[in-house]
Length: 505
Image 1: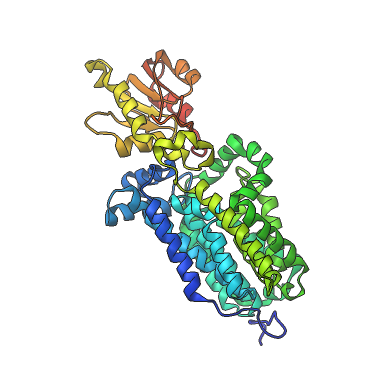
Image 2: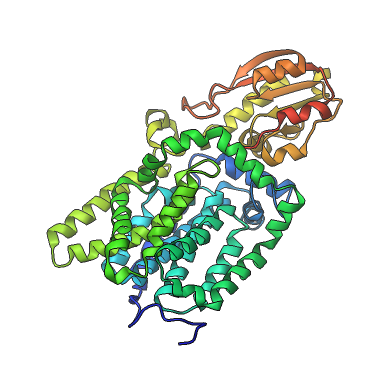
């Protein structure tokens, strides 16, 4: 071995053969289930936002995200049609990839058939994977990248093959087009390697080549940020101000439910064992990196537990390897582990997927993550009715201004151009699409803070209250539709007061 390719394992790697057929069977079954549920309920607000950006404003970047998701959603609508099912196909494929990558991590750690199947099944039924894959979110592609980088890092360290650093760097570079939080993974992993080793990896030139590759591939994102005064930092401040405090308070509780209580037992076991198992002495950076990333996640942006959720996939695989050894030749223990994963998985499926009929959702709404995706056509009808109720003379000079991109995206998706005026919003990237024309002296405001409206207009009156039509309590229920007239200032001057950078809720 040369200095460029140090051997970090004195004998051989831990890797065993990946049992492709059963693992691929789990991955395929997951994709089929996700596609079967793809048309249930409706669009997530983020999905309508991506659709709107992709259709009207394809760009190298946006104030709240890189360009991949709007581009991906737009490509799906062009190839497969403008439908809910079409834009969710990538999510099903991403989930299948996560299952295969996760099982590959288990194999890399020495897990044989049983460990690989437990990893595949546990990931396939985790709330995080199901939720991120049922919808198209920035985390949908980002989670695949985290899983791949973890696998490549383990191969580089355990096999002593620095070529995998190049694969990791390329993956990070591509993933930067989906979500910037991917940078937390290599930074925290490198910190983990510095803390617990093996530090010999820092003598491998290909590690630095991988870093350079990531920067080169992702450089257009950096150029966009520099050219636009680093809008992602403004977005981070908005997220932290909006819900950072609450997220930090429930950070560790959410960690349990991010994967599911049953799966949490496995990844916690994996976290403990990577520090205690002698044969995993070169894997300790995985655990140390996770602890570093968790500390960072509590300080940056909104302090959400899913910012480090990608690490849990590797730790879960480690826990499954331990479970395989614990259940070897012990049917009682195997039944306990299999039963726990099965029951926990069933609960996570019910939580993350739209298994309850929409008409019955009001009776089970506290057991679903899909509440944000229902009732949007009804909301659009209410806004349309409010606009159509205006006198004809006022309709000619009226605009709609929404509080968030979900409302704007719903109007774009379900509204009729012949029945509605132009729609504006100060939320995230949509702020750049304004202000409304100065001729617009009548506003149908959807969900806008009443104090702001009273300050900017001579008269305002509530004409309706949003209702999703299903009796479901979600972020839109109860918001006011307010008609305002006679702005006190030109739109150009008051538009900055409508701007806000944060998530949907």
